[in-house]
Image (cartoon, rainbow, N blue to C red; front, side):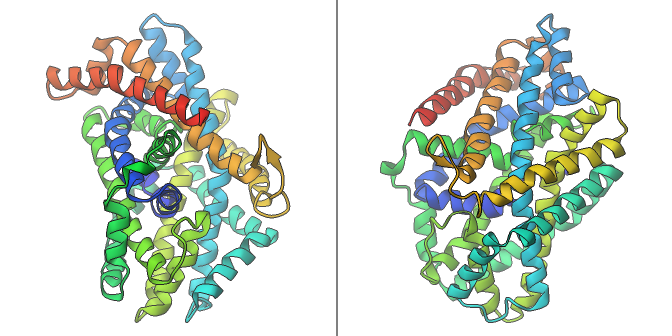
Length: 433
């Protein structure tokens, strides 16, 4: 359940709709689904397996599995790449989690009542230029996540997820039903589920892999860390499939919530990072009892955001504790302090440093592109390569404990001859494009 909470978050409800919009809609959705189930599930199984086999932080777990098989401890570098990915995403994700908390506050205060499309867009633009406000809410988000890992993850997160995820599903379903009545749904269904294959390109496929990995939580250390906590009697295969099904369902439902509002209000589906923050307030302003629904939705979205931030923080904090022999409390405080400092860079990339260019791309674009479309696929590729070609078949079969030898062999052959080549080709061609 903690892993579901890590996977189901802003990656589904904030990132999936705008990345879909930026990459042409339906064709991207189709490629994303193939990537999530054909690539994401096998690698997720491998990542959880490594965590449970090693019972330590990602670098140490991978090193332990490598040594067990007579391999070099240098494979621990894959775990360090996963930790770097987690930290890179954390400093950008913390800012977006702060946006969610800010919008929760605004909805509670009643300032979203009767808002128009123009006013909604203007409010978000004003937020991006307000450094103190963005920094304040980023710090609030990081402090909440820090307090959770400070006190321990399992009981608090699992209990919250069991209650709040069903409520999030219920509210998403309510908003989908609202869109059916108000309008914009036919255009959305065509946009999301009538593929235009001419829009498929190496760059788009790379974006789909990056989104699948980002949304599921692959190759960012969190799933391996939760795997280290996973009891032996829990099926890794069933857990991985369940996580991806729930994660994908939330992402598709988010699309059915966001895009009808986009089309009904004449907004641009390729509206970028602010898409959800400019569209949801419009729906809440139009529906009866919209303020109450808005408060509940942004509250649950805040919880989804925080659980994902916790999933990013947990392996980083655990590594600090392991590396420097600190207690959990000290490691948590140091991690949040460092993340807050780097979070300032992310905040400034939206305004004062918006013109800073790195290799022809803005700082803000690079902070999204490098971890999501280079580190994530590369980390996933190395995990798949290590498990498929270097970890012994006996060790992998023992830890996965799948129902039959045939199922295990299917997974292993899929990893070797489909997943590894596919991710390698996607990574190389997408980056080259």
